[in-house]
Amino acid sequence: MPGTPTSTAVAAFYDNTDVVDALLGSRLHMGYWPGSTNLEQAQDHLTDLVIAALDAPRGCHVLDVGCGTGGPARRLARTSGVAVTGVTLSARQAEQAGAAPGVSFRVADVVRLPFPERTFDAAMVLESLFHVADKRQALREIARVLRPGARLAVADLTQRRPLEAPTPGAAQLLGLLACEEAGAYEGLLADAGFTIHEARGIGTEISATYRALLDRMAGNRPVLEKTIGEETVLALEEAVQALAAAAEGGDLGYVLLTASLTERAEV
Image 1 (cartoon, rainbow, N blue to C red):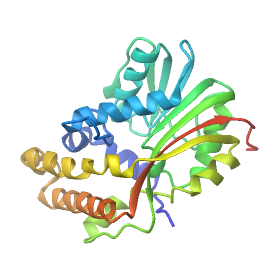
Image 2: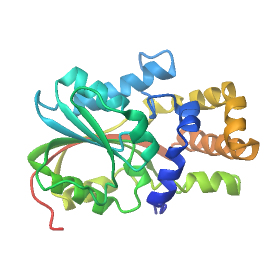
Image 3: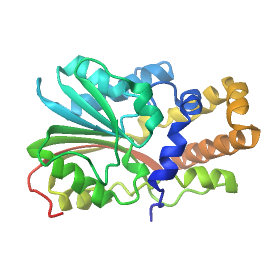
Image 4: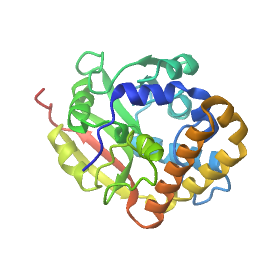
């Protein structure tokens, strides 16, 4: 069963933008490594895969759920000629994201989106659902604000069995994750009124990210320790090591899903 992270805990983690940047860089997500030689290239490659999967028509309005500091949203707007509204739980992230032509950001929770029905033509959900305990409600809310026929692209971590945390500190950080088994998304999306077009497992292609994150942490350790303390840095390192071990053992995967809205969910 997935964990039960709270919106408050997730927001508090991402409000510490200096720490998140020291860990993940400005792109704030995993990387797709075939053809990539460093973390930034791999992260851009994954963003481009999600953008291609979304296939949003030029001129449409896209919802970016869990937008972080806005890198993928700006890349989507720039490369696809669309307008993007990004939402994040973190007020610090929304402030740091600022604004760009055709792109705006606001603080909002995906289980209670502050938009009227049928506002958006498409939605991109890049590594945010694994922070949501009630994915059924989240997907129903996304469906509510999409127009019929709208496309959806979801990129998310998946798990075969619960993650094992080596220490209480690592367990607290891993408690921010609520990963599902890959097969669970078929029912969750269908319940929200979506038809899945493709579910692509790319866990092998993204797995090198964990070791890259550990290397990045090692290089930024003085900054991290000054910001959050040596004990918390150690817990963060242990949590990433646990993720790496789970991925290498085949227990932690990654799925890229594309779907379209066929029915309005009853909410």
